[in-house]
Length: 403
Image (tube, rainbow, N blue to C red; front, side, top):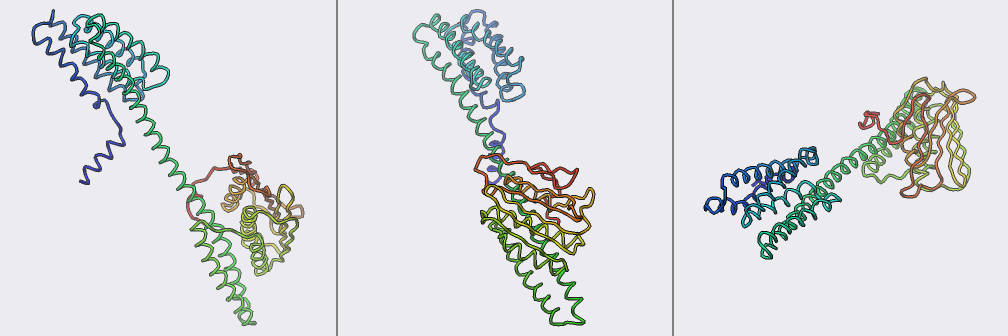
């Protein structure tokens, strides 16, 4: 049963083909029987016409299931020729030959599949079929007219619906892939920001413990205790990041940044003013504080770092300034890129530059309230001079989990 299920799934993915319309050629058996019975005039001409009509019908229905050839000039030329041959046979022989006309409806419905072109072509065809059938067989042939109309409309509707379902399925799969990529990107950002900061703090405190151990064992043990606390907190944050429910607190991140900077012999100066911020805004600014403090500890070689948070009625502003060696030309950290993408998605900006008195200056700005659903995001500015980071663009390395 497994191979049969796989076969059915494969057919469902491929969709219908021209083979699904070939059984309707059995409608021509009545015309063939008329030729065999000997009642037809010039049977050889009728047989040739029947072979030509069937060949054209097969060619049309197979081309109708090829999107590149469905509406080509060749397909419409074949359709016009089949219409001419079908009406010629119906007018010349009548009777069972009138059943060839619904086949024209099937072929037309497979080619047109709805829209304005269906109205333009289907109703003239049905009207012409009605004229020919009433002229040849009178009112008794009303079934042929009805059959032609139904064959056009039902075929067009079913195939158009099938196309729509296939497009929706493709869209659903694309959305699922996009959701997976988005989740990978979220996890990559969170893991980088969490572990980058935490491991930096652990390294700094371990170095402090090594320096203090020979002369002040109690102070060294205090640093080791801090390492244990930071490690446990990191485990909790990683679990929360994996489940997607982590909500950062700006106050907590400021306290952690102050402690990390002090442990690295960097004088921390933290200032905060203005009304309280929305939780979403605080969480984003908390990420910025975490990443900025990590960069100061790891790269700046600074002795002083100032963190200032100012909130106004419309926007909140965070600046991190140090007196270290300043930005390296052409350097671009993946952590800052990730922060720029986060802030741009929330309508904010992230900029970096050399501080006026030397060192490094990072500035983040965010609206005090998150944008309304459907409101377009404001693009963020580059995080490094000469290295633009367009919003929503993800470099391949961001899809991994490299620190």
